[in-house]
Length: 334
Ligand SMILES: C[S@@+](CC[C@H](N)C(=O)[O-])C[C@H]1O[C@@H](n2cnc3c(N)ncnc32)[C@H](O)[C@@H]1O
Image (spheres, rainbow, N blue to C red):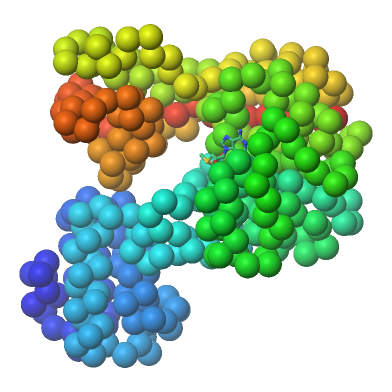
């Protein structure tokens, strides 16, 4: 018996996977069958398509049992397998490394549908895990793809994982230092951290060759308004208020018209910008909110108040927790 109490024996891998999928479904995991198979492949050190031939001895059973139990507690699948699929590439992930997000994947889909010159120079700005940079170089093997990020530790970790698969550099996106003007700048999930969008777009315009494209996505006007409203109500009361005196939320969620005007003022020849609601129900809501969406709030509080703050926000949000993301899409030509 496994700890989950459902797997009768480990002799038949199909039965074991069926039982694991049932246990994950009962625990509320969104894609139980797929997760059960991916975890089995990981435990057996094989591919998902070769599971029928896997060695399912006692070691496999114990490993699989533990993985399924942790997944049932909503540890992200990618952190259990150590990898995440991103378009045509598999990237190594783990604590402290961004799991490539669905929005970045949609940027990749858009990118690969474009006609580009034969040997384009492409920048993935604020590349994070480097996943987009690698996927782009795989799609355009003749392209020169440069991944830039302001965080040295992020780039160092990406270099270890990606080796020579991408040209990775440390740099601030407001002061881009490239050896030549480039054909395309992609950027996902970062511009809302930049307060001065006029300066940002001037720097990006200067980096692009005439006719070059800027394609980006970030949080836009109205992003997480509901969530932030609930957090605001909580921090206005005791015992939190004193820790937020004079505090300014760090995000810059711009609107599409305002952004298009700024791009044109920065010298872009044309700019198309639009909002896209993208609500998401995070699997591990408390961890997701406290580390990502409400991370800046939590950081503002002393350790002893952080859990209580999250309890209070979650109580106001109720179940299920939905993060009211609104994306700002940008497609501009220099
Ligand atoms: C939310 S992550 C997005 C990573 C990746 N683009 C993705 O979609 O998974 C934001 C990234 O922007 C980088 N960043 C933030 N401010 C920056 C700046 N001023 N210059 C360069 N990189 C910056 C951070 O280090 C981080 O890797």
